Amino acid sequence: MLARRLMAVALWSGMMVLDACGGGGGGKCTIEGVSVSASATAVPASQQVDLGANVKQGPGATGCNGGVTWSSNPAGAITGTQQLAAKFATANPGTYTVTATSIDDPTKSGSVQISVQAPSSCGTPNGTVVTHSGNITASETWAGNGVTHSITSSVRIKPGATVTVQPCAIVAVAAGAEIGVEGDTNASQPAKLVAAGNDPQTGFVSFVPAVQGQTWGGIRGYNVQSLVELHNTGVVSAGAGPFYRNSAIVMAGPGLTAPPQGVLTADNLVVENPVGGGLYLDGMAAFTPQSTYLGVTGAQDHPLAMHLMAVGSMPLTQVQNSLYDDALMLSSAPNVTRDTTIHGYIPLYFEAQVKVGQNTPGTTTTLTVEAGSVLRFAPGNDIRMYFGNGSAGAGILMATGDAAKPILFTSAGASPAAGDWAGLLLLNSYGSQLSYVTIEYAGASNGVVSANCRPSGSSDDAALLVADIPAANFLTNSTIQFISGHGIDATWAASVINAPDLAAGNTFNSVAGCKQTYNAKAGGTCPTLGCTEP
Image (spheres, one colour):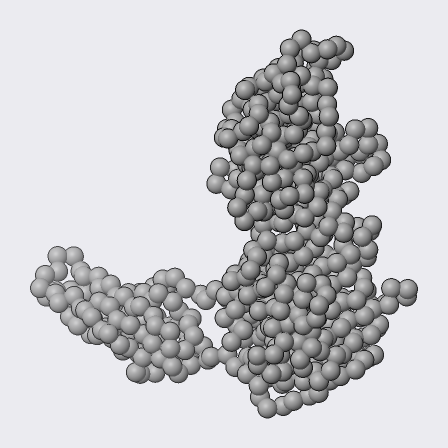
C-alpha cells in the first residue's frame, strides 16, 4: 500500500543486551552468566530477527559445553537454533520474551523482549462510503480509519471553509474530477484543504482514482488564499486535463511580480504516476516552511515546475522512475530580484535566460547555490545567466561546492555539445565566489561586445565572463570544459591586462579560445591582444 511508498519510519533497532545474574557454581565448569542480543527489538509481524547468546564462563572453567537452549514466551517464535544463535519470527502481534539458558548450568539465563507490531490496515476500505460533490462552504471533517470519501464530481472548497481529512481516510475521485480550493483574495479569506495524516505507515491519507486504471483531475489551489496542507499523504494517478502540464497538484501564488509565498505544505507527500508533471507552482507559489519531504514517482513530465525565486522553499525532494528528473524553472518570471538559495535536492532545468539583480542602483541580490546542485540549460537559445547589469543593482553568485559535491552548470541537451548555451555573465557582481564548480558545453553568443584585449577576431563569448576586477579567491578548484568560445572572458579594466590570473589553479578541457583573455587596459588602448592563459 501507500505506506511503503512514503518515507520509511525507522524501527528501534540495534543490539539490546540484558545480562542475567545467578549464583556461583562449582566444579570444573562454572558459568557466571548469559547475555542475549537481538538485531531488532520492535518489528512488523513475520519479520525475522537474528538472535545471539554469549555465555560467560567462570575463571579457570574447563570442560564446558558452552551452548544454550532457546525459548520464547509466548512460545513458538524461535526457529533455526544453533549453539549460540537462533532466529525469531512470528505472525502474531504482541510482546515476546526470548530466553537463552545455559546447557552447563540451567540456573543461568539471559533474555530480551521483542515487540511484534500488527500489520497496518491503513489504506484498506472499511466499507463505509461518504459521497461529496459541489461547493463546500462550511468547514468539514472527513473521517478516517478506512472510510472512503467518494468524489463523484468536482468539489470546490470555498472561502472560510476548511476540509480536514483524517488519518487512514481514502479519498476516491471520479475520472476527470478535481478537488479545488478557492479562497477570497479581496477579503483575504482563505479556503483550506488539510490532509491530516500522522504517520507514513499507520496514519496516511490516500487520494486515488475511484476506478483503478482511470485518472482524476488532481488538487488545485486557485489563488494565494487557497491553502493546501498534505501531511503523510499519497496522491495517485492525478492530473487529467490539458493545462499546467497535466500536473497532479497545481497551486497559484501571489503573482509574477510579488515575492514568493507559501501556499502548499508537503510534509511526507508522495505523488505517484501523475498524468503529466507532479506539481505545478504558478505565480510565485511556494512551499511552506512546514514542508519536509516530497517524493514523485512515475511522472510523465517534469516532477516539479516552479519559479526560480521560489525554489528556496523546496523541501527534500526525491524523484524515481520518471521521464525527467529535474525541476522546470518557469520562464514566465525567470529573474531573481530577492536573495534566493538553490538547495540542490534535484537538478534544475532552464528554458529562458536568468538575470540576478534589481534595476535599482545600490541594491544587491545574492543567488546562493549549495554544494551538489545541478543547473541545466536548454540548448539552442543562447541562454545565459547574468548577474547585475552595469550601473543597476548588483547580482552576486555564491556557488561553493566541495570535492565530494561539486556544483554543475551544464547543457540540458540529450547529446550535449560545446556552445549549447551561453554561460555565466558576471557584469556587476563583485564579491561573487565560485569553488568546486564545473561549467561545461557553454560559449554560445552572449550578446556582449567589450573593449578588452582578447585575441583579434574573437568574440566575448565565453563560459564565464567577468566584468569586475575579482577577488583573489573568486574562482578556485573549478573546471571549465567543452566550450565553443573562451573559458574566461576578462572584460574589467585595469592598469595591467593579465592580472589577476583566474585560470591558475583551475582545470580547462576542450576550450576553443583562451583559458582566460587579456582584460581591458584602463585609460588607454590595448598594448597587445591575446590570452592571459592560452
